[in-house]
Length: 160
Image 1: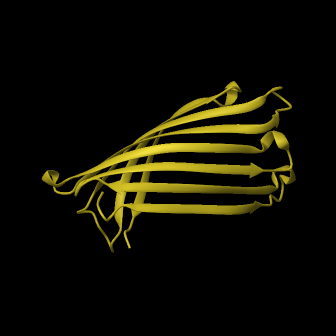
Image 2: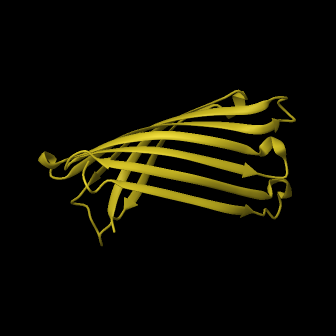
């Protein structure tokens, strides 16, 4: 392992107070981690576990979720600094109580596959932009919450 390997822990707790939707009042908290290993000058591997809790005034809206993901990234010096990263994650989300309309406890499983492109040449004030394409498949035991989506996102990063 190279000395540039890293470990990140990030958490947050939010109080939710909705003006017109009192039943959504409550709190949300999450904890995300990232273990990133440099396996050479141009290759990296990341492991991304996380947990999330959401509590409201309605137990059928409360949930807990566990996420596990991974990424592998490579910088291609032969292509003058192009960086490509492949990612995949799985999220298991369980609700606390039976939904009053659907008559069952909702359970969702979300799979995400992503592809990220960036280039070291496109740097402005130390910030690197990136383009992320992701495919999301959410499977729910309540059919109305099942979907497939293709997303195009833009991101920025900066190393300190």
